[in-house]
Amino acid sequence: MRAPFKHTKKKADLCECLPDDLLVFILSKLSSTASSPSEFINIVLTCKRLNRLGLHRLVLSKAGPKVFAVKPRNWSEKTHTFLKHCVNAGNVDACYTLGMIRFYCLENRGSGLSLMAKAAMKLHAPALYSLAVIQFNGSGGSKHDKDLRAGVALSARASLLGHIDALRELGHCLQDGYGVRQNVAEGRRMLVQANVRELAYLLREVTPSASDSLMLTWRTAVTCQRDVTALLSDYGYRIPVPEVQPVNRFLREWFESGKGKLEEGLRLCSHIGCGRPETRPHEFRRCSVCGKVNYCSRGCQAMDWKLKHKMECSPTEHYAEGGAGVDLNNEFAIPNDAV
Figure (cartoon, rainbow, N blue to C red):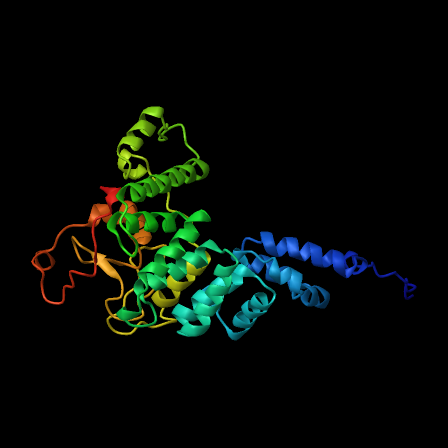
C-alpha cells in the first residue's frame, strides 16, 4: 500500500529575507577584504540576486586590489569589462590596475596613462610613482620625451604618501642633481628616511624565531646612523622579499607566459617584483659594472641589488672596455645606499 504523501513547507532562504541595502553593505565589506578574485566571485555567483547586487556601484567602488589579482591565463573580455565597471564606479585601485595593463600589456598608451592619472589625482601612491617612472624613461615615446622634472615632482608626491621606492628615487635624484638642483645633504637625508621605513617594514613583517633571529640593538641603530646610506641587509639582516603587487605580478606573468610578446630587443625590468617592459630598445638603464641587467628605476635597482644582484654582479671584459653597443650615458651606478 502506497505511503501517504506528506506536504512539507519549503524552508525560506535567509538571504531572501534580507533587504537589498543590507546585502549591498555585506557585499561591500566582502569586496574590500577578499583575498582573491575567486573569494568574491564565488559568492556573487551563488544566486541571481547576489549577482545583481554584486555589480552595485557601492560594492564595486569598495573592491580591494586583491579582487583584481587576476592571472594572465584567466584574462578575458569579461574580466576587462568587470574592471571597467569598477573604474566607472570610482574605484581607484581599478583605475591603476587597468591603466597599467592597458599601457604595458595591451599597448593602449593613451587610455592607460589617462587611467593612471585619474588614480594619481586621487592620491594613489603607486599610480604617482608609476607615472614618475614613465616620465623618467619617456615610456611610450622616444628618449626625447623624457621629462625629468615631472618625474621628480611625481616621486616627491608619492614619497609624501609613504611610497618607499619613490622616496629612494627622490633621494638619488637630489644626490646626483638628476632633474632637480643638486642637494647632497637633503638627498642623503631622504635615503636615511627610506632605510628607516625599510626598518619599520622589517619589524612589522618579520616574526623572529628562537633559532636564527637577530636582535636589533641600539648599537646597530647607531651604526646605521653613521653610515647613513647603508641598507639593513649590509649589517647581516635578511630583508624579506616584499609582497609583489598584483598588477606587477600580472605584467611579468603576461610576458613570461607568452600571453604578450615583446618586440625584438625589448626586455623586462630585472627586478622580479616589477614586471615593467621596455617600450623601445635601450629604454631602461643598465648596471654600470656588468651590463647584464637593466632597471626601469633606481627603486627597482636598489631592491634587486640587495635581494640578489649584489651576489651576482661582476664586470665582464667586453663591457668593462666599452664594447660595441655600450651606451655609457644610459647606465645605473652601484647604489650609494648599497655599498
